[in-house]
Length: 214
Image 1: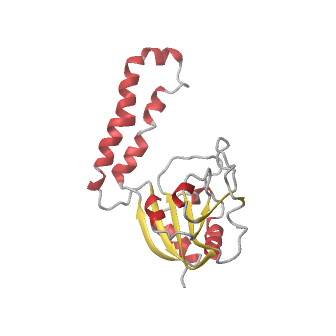
Image 2: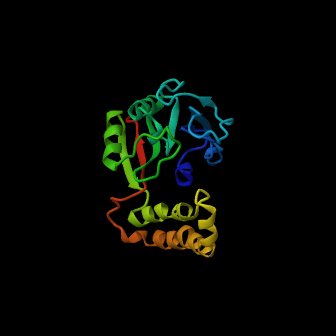
Image 3: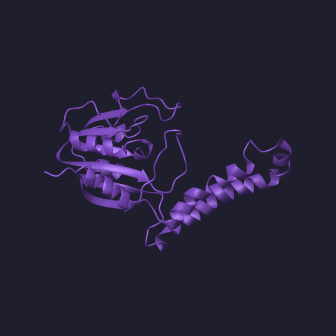
């Protein structure tokens, strides 16, 4: 997102659709940034910095209101992803861009509002139906990156607080080894092996750049 923010001109109108806590607002400090979310994803989050609370399938903005629309890790939480993409197309000016990320292989989260996972072909299909011209769909890492992400929770699964006290007491000497191995060493090694996967058909998700045609 830092890379994309550098491509946005000062004063541009930017809609962050599914902004959550607005973590990307500082990156767009020189723009007319608007954060919108339905504010139901995570009860622990602070949604107080949103500019609007709204269903992303019915955005409360006029057509051609924005130069750019951001949507990061939001599409899987929408019961009608096609409806949102149609709305994103509507509120973009002709020639405006959509920056979107969506997961392909990722754990369940923000339940029960977690509905879909997306291949590059599924994303291209939905974007085409909404009227977008797709410029790029890029995998977010390959097989080894996926393994690095998937292996991190293993320590918590082995030695979590839900385990009986006696088990955790007897296993105490292994806890530090497990934590170092599964949350630090192996993810670090796997992440650096990711360049060996040139096919990128196994990935945590995709980054999309699409444009509303002139």
